[in-house]
Every structure is written in C-alpha cells, then in structure tokens.
Length: 87
Image 1 (cartoon, rainbow, N blue to C red):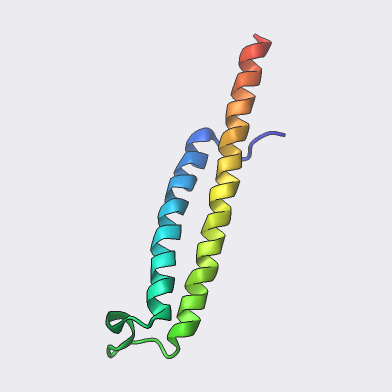
Image 2: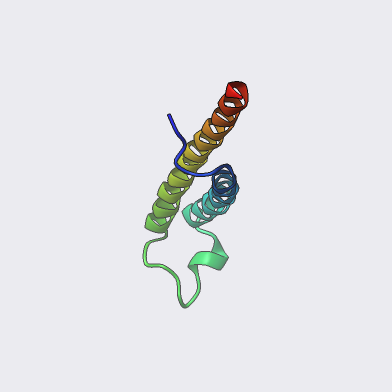
C-alpha cells in the first residue's frame, strides 16, 4: 500500500491534530460546565451544551486524523525501508 501524503505532510498533520484535540477538548469541557467567561456574555451561544457537543465531535475527528496521519507516516517509513533494501 502506498502512502497518500508525504512524510512531512503527515507529520505536520499529526502535530496540528494533536493541538486541535487539546484545544477543542478543553473548549468542549468548558462549554459543558458552563464556564462563566464563555457563556455569560453579551455574545453567548444560545445552547452551551450543543456547542460542547459540536466541539466534542470535532475532537473525535481530530483524533481520527492523528491515527490516519500516523498511519501515513508509518507507510512512508516502510516504503523508504523497502527502497533501501531493493538497492
């Protein structure tokens, strides 16, 4: 199986996805409390629980992207090793 993305792109995607999981997971947690600074302002969301759920879904998507890009990195390393052995 050949990788879709290059090693650099897969690594960059993994790193950005880790930050996405951290940030969106924190926002999901804070909106579920509800945190005073996020929900009791003039521009507050109508339903903080729905915002928390949306952030949680986005967190799961980013976690999937960590797995996908990690597999891409692994495939790139495997292909690199195979090319070295063929020489």
